[in-house]
Image (cartoon, rainbow, N blue to C red; front, side):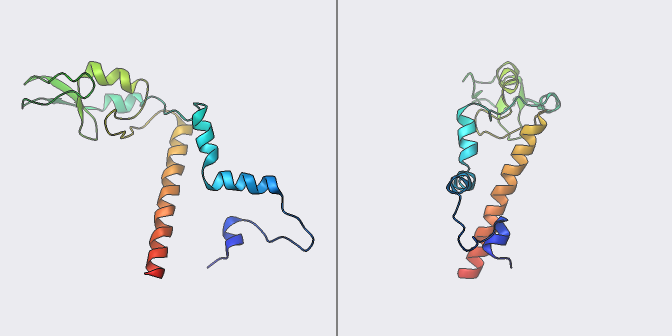
Length: 147
């Protein structure tokens, strides 16, 4: 098992060396995802539109029971009506969900994210998932060692 400094890619201070306070502040911001938070305040990390292929691949379903509402317009679907079904199983009128997906890639109800055509956003999303998985792995390791 590596030590803290090796894992983080850092080294200990040498004799007489003083710490770089700005570097510590930058590391603090990085460790607590503050750069990401600051960027999202500027509107730089807004999710892009869903990919055209994902929109075209949406399943079309015919309503067979009554009492189901479109979460966007709140109108009840009529029996026999064709609706768009997202991968998260939420059903919408085509005229309600298609303009939404042209602006953002997520379900308006549960925020399930569809793929996008933006390579940078997809890389950011993959990195975010990897960081979350790493946190879960560290928590599991910690729990297995100290429980």
